[in-house]
Image 1 (cartoon, one colour):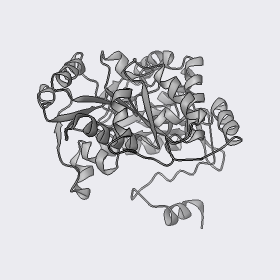
Image 2 (cartoon, rainbow, N blue to C red):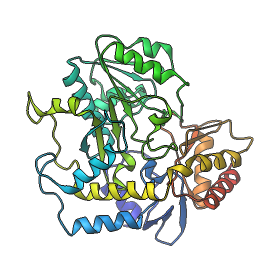
Image 3 (spheres, rainbow, N blue to C red):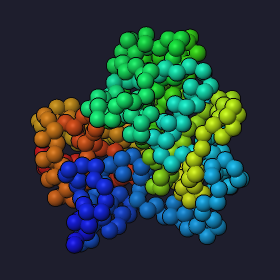
Length: 390
């Protein structure tokens, strides 16, 4: 059997038509197939590879930690310097109320932890989330997801969740005394890059304070510089009670995190003890890789370059087939007439050596979320291929 046949026979399939592009190497901003053909990567593993593929600093950190130890004990029991060093570095780059980190294996696990912690801390059970929101695919996270298409086959799900339109007054008014937490994305990524109105999140935060509920901000896709600041919420005038991280957090290795105040987080430590557990969360390899990626991101001033690169994409992507272009930093939605047009364009791009994708709730939009290391020359190349493919 050839590799594609083996892939389809032995790996669980989540789509009837997977891309099935075989990758033999990935370096910088490119993917390579077994024949050596290069593909400029416009999605970076879905906002994971912010510092590029196989970043030398990240690889060196992984190798150095691998020589010391791998897994030794479940999260939270032994002092492991890669965990404490990375947690400290994250906290030092956040407002003072976000000072305690719980590492998980993925963004969706961070969502699950936040669901439990918000109920435990507030002693309330209800949630408010947005229509067309995405917080992960596990059962609790799926309950928060604001799209029935993705949820219907898996009901019954967690009760007590109101789904209200993003950016609406009705969303704010849905928050009441029974609300444990509000889960919100600072930018709705999978909806096709929907940016909040100027004061909407500030008004939402005020409503949370009035009703003593927690504001959980999901920066799993937008964190680590993708929007032009280290955290997207910095540009929106709010400080969350809980912050969800993932994607780029592990520098290319699987990792998520929930960040909150120590006061809130301490709810996990008693009544019951071990209120939340994970075997591999905060794996030393992942923490070493993530810390190296964060340091590289800042040393190379990558997120300070994001707005200029965003502007270059927007100036070049002009075409009659493009119905709209929405962006917030280097997460860009290129809206076409319909899903068919998008799939045709993506297929032509792949033939021309450009790899991109679409959005879960906006299949009529092409996703652009490249490594933050993408150069101006590569942006020009990508736009030329996109335009010719249209």
